[in-house]
Image (cartoon, rainbow, N blue to C red; front, side):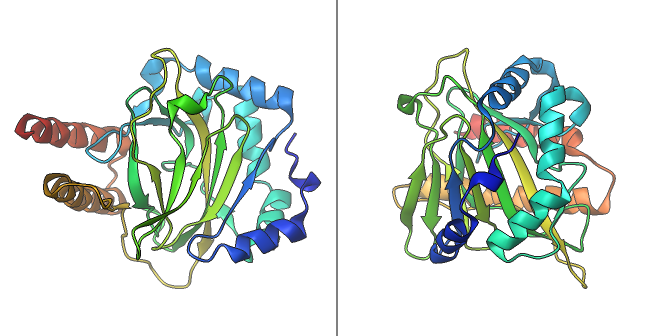
Amino acid sequence: MIKFKNFDLSNLKKQFEENNVIKYIILDHFITGNYARSIAAEHEAVPQEYWLDYSHKNQIKTGITNKSLMGKNSRLLIEELSSSIFLEWLSELTDFKDLIVDPELDRAGLHKIKTNGYLNIHTDEQSHTKHKYWKRRLNLLLYLSPDYEKSWGGNLELWDHKSRRLIESISPEFNRCVIFATDNKSYHGHPSPLNCPENSARRSLALYYYQKTNKALPVTPTNYMSLPNDDIKKRFSIRLNVFFLYCFALLKRYTKLDDEYIKRISSYFTRRLEKKD
């Protein structure tokens, strides 16, 4: 089903290593065509009420982490991407050994961004919010919109934080997989609002890979950055939102609160900020 064995691993390994600021590779036609279309159909068929709203000042998106709400083929794909065979392939590609996948798919799973949705440039959480010994190492994104058109935008942008320079803009083509290392330099996102029809969306599947460490890691929430053309007001709102996200990350680690409850808190602050705007 996954065609990773068909890719030239030695060449991909070289590409991954040569990308200095953010190590990444792009794999087109990542899974077989019929399989990809079936997963895309399952993604689209999930009722709207099942989607968790992750929206706040720095992003407008939804997601699903509960595997029981996903289609059969989507669950099978996640199992295959979590298998020991695929993890060994990832380790060989990236030199990250003993990789593990979060079985609860915290913030991973299915993602959906509809028209006018966006995701400001950011680095991801460096440690798992619930498992303080888990260090995040890799993101895998598989794009699942068969009807995607380049006029929609929604490209995955990779940025050099130090020089505030765009490294690459990657179109979310159907059945395209992007794998990249996550650290405090791997700034990415799609900051421009998506320009798709109301009945379409930028659909994807995301998996995050971790390594277990010998010491507890501090809470390091998603860190958004402003872009060169952002005004002072936007810069301030981005940083304020980062502070709220840090508070939410602390709540997730040290309490039993989940994303559903935190979503309500986030929505409250979002509404308050919008009123001020």
